[in-house]
Image (cartoon, rainbow, N blue to C red; front, side, top):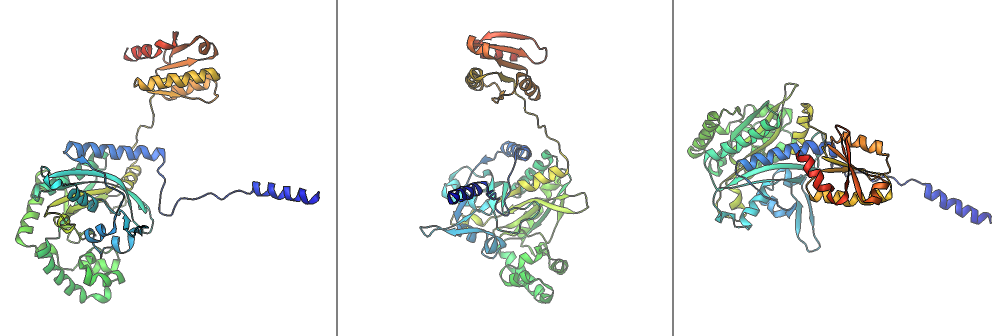
Length: 441
């Protein structure tokens, strides 16, 4: 007997033992309803402006072949070298979760025969991207981008239009204290000669470079200009500037871009150290920088021209230019600025019930109201009529539809005007028609 009792106590002890909660993966983030309101504000305004500018929405898969990013983004970039989430399937396919959006759009442009469409092709996209990097404020391993691209036109006016749309989006969102940092990194021909000049300069300063820059010197010397290490930034201040070594076509193209920006009065800053971190860029590169309250600047997004990417991925020679921004970073900027959004949700009618039979009637009535495009709120818990009417006030409802035990038996509904307090009993079959009439009135 004591043995049985001991076993029962052990079973009870195991039941009482609390299971440790499963936590979110490092570098990921839950986006809760209050924050979603801010995200909706950012995305809805961005979508509308893209549509106004003639862009169509495209969605590409989160999973792509690893080779797409190796060829498109570049083997020697930080993204491909150490930031991609990659794996091999059971069928031996090498896949990666997309670290950025442009390469996938270029692949879609080729694969779906968009070169046969009327040019230029203007596309916008949004969605999650993935990079294995150290999580920090505003930067997560799963982050979200909004971007837009124009394929099939190499005119400088197209570069200016993309920059203008980026500018317009931030102005619309209420982030007005921004400037455009802009540079040209030339084409393959003039950039090749400049890289040699850059290597020669940095080889004389090699002892002053960080380990990453020493490694990049042969494979990707342009990235040395973009290094954020203090000692490397000091070396970069005296480095040769690519703007002084552009070929005539690249020089003229960049000059035209700046003239277009002057015409539409976009504030820009020539930044000779701006190169962007991806191999596919050519000619115009730019970033949108925000001036913060501490007197510093931070990048909200960036983009540029990538005329060789489509051909690099197996398509026809196709000029292209685009821009993207991180939704998390923009949302955090809006929070810092204290931008207030309307959190209240208006429900035209609120359904109030008392008793089990009334709850069953409410479910059917709720369905009819939704089908008739009438926004309705409800509380199917066992709250009192008084507490449910308080909820109706919270949702700014014009009318409360009340079903108690008597109404449930009679198949009727009490329509209560929430402003005047006037009430009227109507039959269930005509309540939707009566509510529509009163809402119009």
